[in-house]
Length: 197
Image (cartoon, rainbow, N blue to C red):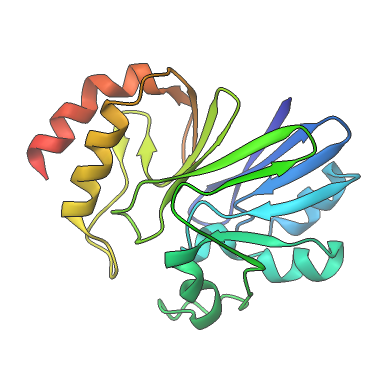
């Protein structure tokens, strides 16, 4: 399994391409991600959204049209793809698969689980693939996703952090912004964030 990353757009939102056994998964294609993605995929299988914020889904529509591949998005965030609730003029897209909380999917021999960690958004998820979480705006190195946006929920975030704190495995975290980390490293600060929420 190989992972490529490129920060996209004014918010430097990390777009990821995961390559495995001759196919690719595209994760969070943000602003102006299309050209970079097209240069780095040969057999794309799907677009996976960690959540519905515009800076993570901006290139959904263009990539779906160009590559003829499905979009997977957490069910509770699907409306953000379709309605542009933040008024950012994001190209509207439609999820082909509205992912249920903690939903599991298989791509060839690869199992993909959308671990549901609501709070930043109603559907916010960490996409677990082997020993990796593509955690969107749930966890960052030394920080967590904001909970002061429309549709955010501090109480839900607190419960999500408690769920992450109890998670039994150490995984590498590939966040929506900034450098990677590990869950073990972030557990040191998760307790603090639980207290301040």
